[in-house]
Image (cartoon, rainbow, N blue to C red; front, side, top):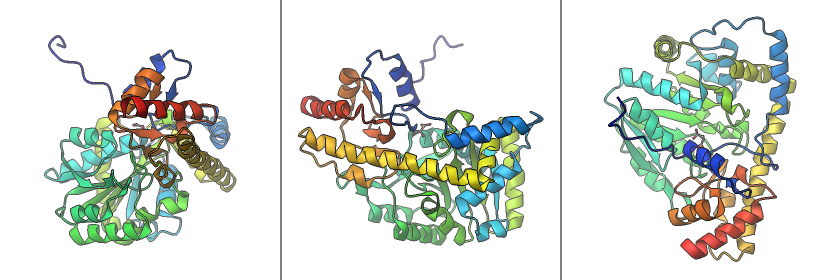
Length: 400
Ligand code: LMR
């Protein structure tokens, strides 16, 4: 069967990790995949996660199936986290949440659900966006188009052009928005700009699909959910794909959620009935461990506070690395102004480095970045930062 079939290209992000693992250069640095690393270059298990897992293992009496929609306590905890404790959306039961295998799983379940009832819609993604958005919505059978977002000149948000495009999107189409810590650019709208985006969405009648994978990596858990709260206040339909991969470090437990917010509790019930059929035919019901662990933490005030501290430490370390990179590049005599890196938020920065420089760094220096120049700042450490800065300076000189 496969004899005349061409192999598929490696994944633009996860394929890079495969390449990195094979690289024998002891100085190699992975600034590719969006995985947090501590200052020793390790991806730690959070202390609070260890505690919750111990409790879970001690108390768990069965490995029987979860419901199709996942652990109900997990669903409630996710809603409080992404919408806020006092959310009217929660109080009026207008939101339903299903546990999903990671943020990617949540996006795919949502995409398949929307495709059933809105098959002619176009899905609009930011330019640029996380490469897998195109894969997920494309595989679900949607036509994909893009709205303007990032300005390579200013290294910031092209807000006017973004609004111009969003205001032209027809009712019923689906618009994917990064709730915070835009991937790949690290450039987010501010609160006033979100207000405007929410206004346009309500006015035009397109369906917002919020990708919320980095809650807590921008300014904080509460600050980062601003857009979700504002969309909730409109009383209109939208979806949120959220993830605990990054903020709980539960990458390989595939712990995410799809939340569907509707104008009424009745409609939310209908949405839930259908999303369960999507899940049932895909993977039947979700894996339990990550969700049960997260639910323990989110349901226990002491553990919750510990989690906020550990998350804050991750956020602060990444900020420090942003500052160190900007200073390090200036110290190496790089003329270009990289100060924008300090203004960008979350794990990523669009470095502005050309593809030729990115390739030089990978081939000559074993420093791995995603094509287009996306850097995962969390891959930098006080140990490798000098090597990275001198290598970038050399690469710009030789290949820039
Ligand atoms: C990334 O963008 O690097 C992460 O979201 C991991 C992934 O699945 O691509």
